[in-house]
Image (cartoon, rainbow, N blue to C red):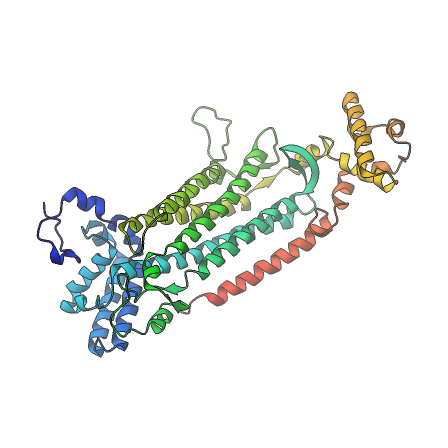
Length: 475
């Protein structure tokens, strides 16, 4: 059965291609999203051929005009792409170019292989996607900074092992995720550095036989430099793996944030309430309000880590240089970046509309003997070694549990039975406010330290905003 379209590689082939194999082999259904990047790469390659004396001025002008037309047509309507039976986006662009300028369209492929072409397209795509994820991380940090600003003084029970541990500022909690996202942004920025290498001009694997100024070509595409080794250039997908890896760790952090909020919305915790706009109900139970947005974020980390594993196994053990296996790099890469984008864009909507129940937070922080460490610190201040103080406070907690009261409600005489050095000033140390204010070392939850951390985080956020604004391309 005929494939219905000529093949760019069909020179030595006489027989017709099996239709099922064609469907199995073709990639246009997913790599069509690289069409804009392929057009950009083709534009730059035409210029490189012109600089090398292979294209005349008029030929360059005609090719640039046709490439511009194709770009405008695709932007307005992608139906031609969807309807095509072209093998991939590169052959589709070439076919459309030939339709517009005839044999000149075939001349554009002089000295170029689909191997260096797709490697270039993919690097251009990853670079753009990293920039988009950085912008989305920045926006989520904004939401967290605004939440932290509102709740520096709001007291939340802190947890270890999901057991109440010590009271913390809710603003301090929000800033913890700002820090995680800052590391995620740094990882994406670091991954971006290794996209800044241009493989175009490497040919199929051995380099091009034409006098192409590859550094000028790289700079015309916004890359810092041309690749050093043609074998590596056409087969390297480290940059794609790094982008997926950065996505996976960022998604892990978003999953942790979601899990915290999912717990905090339950009746058992009751610390926050999600807005109706980011929640769903039950088809059976009318009282339900489900945190579906957060649950989906929590689940997508598995999907993104799956993409990382898939890409790892595609690349594992491949001999140099290009192999058809590399066609399977795109779908996990696309999916990981797409799913992370969805998560990063939904969470600001959740946080910006979040309602807090501060009295419930305070009540929970007051319970669970979360001020036990403060009592131990009080005893250390009276000259006891910490280990001895720790043991004494353990006995005080047992006594409080037996009486069914908090440490701050124990009579002074009961406290003095365990440690005669205890005075009436102990009750001031056992308050929630005193507890968080005492954690005043750098990085601690004392409101003064939280405000300082918030100022630093906002300054860093503003600096990143200015950096991103300065990096925006001119119209």
